[in-house]
Image (cartoon, rainbow, N blue to C red; front, side, top):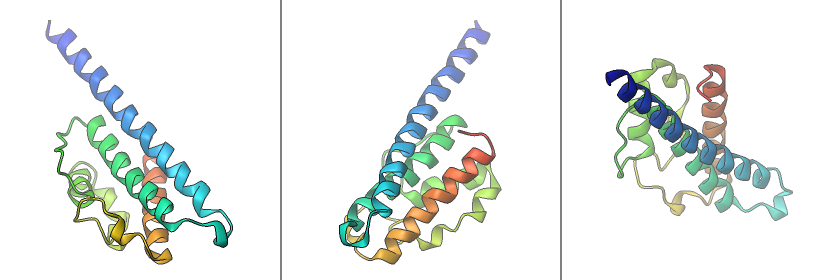
Length: 136
């Protein structure tokens, strides 16, 4: 009985993590496609929002994979801190460049190309790290 419960819990955690990772990959790829358009066609808002959602979902996927409770009102910063508690190597990813990390994801931080690039770079760094440790 305990074995079945434990097995079911692992399956649920893995399924939830995969869903977050799938959404993160989708958003990251949308940001990447937009970012590599010619500058006259670039929509910074799209790159920023998709990068933010990718960051958020990568972090949630990592936490779900490690069976950590995720609250509805989590910010990128609170998710990041939970990830550090599990894996201290997350400190090597520079989250200080994300202006909105302590707030609900908001478009008001998505107007300057430097902010957009910074958020995209963080999403890219998380994606690379998670692949390196075989979390995704």
